Length: 70
Image (cartoon, rainbow, N blue to C red; front, side, top):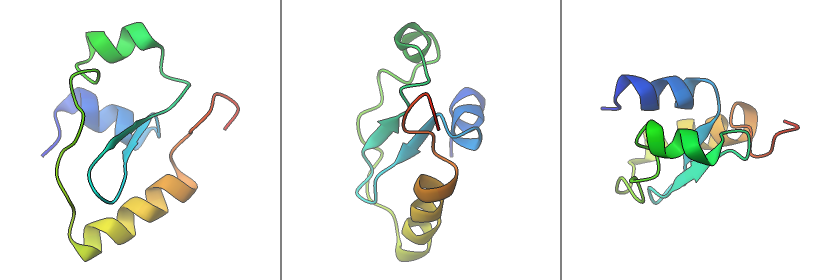
């Protein structure tokens, strides 16, 4: 379960997760915000099951803004 702040960032494509649970942070999220919102302290949330991994692939491909121009 994600905290409200983390869920907000995820829904807006500012963070995502690799299939093995590593946090991915968009270049569009300022570094000071990652600290303020508690994102900087997250490294890995653990692996995901097959259904979750399928959704995360969709999220990374269609929602996650890996760079500021996305």
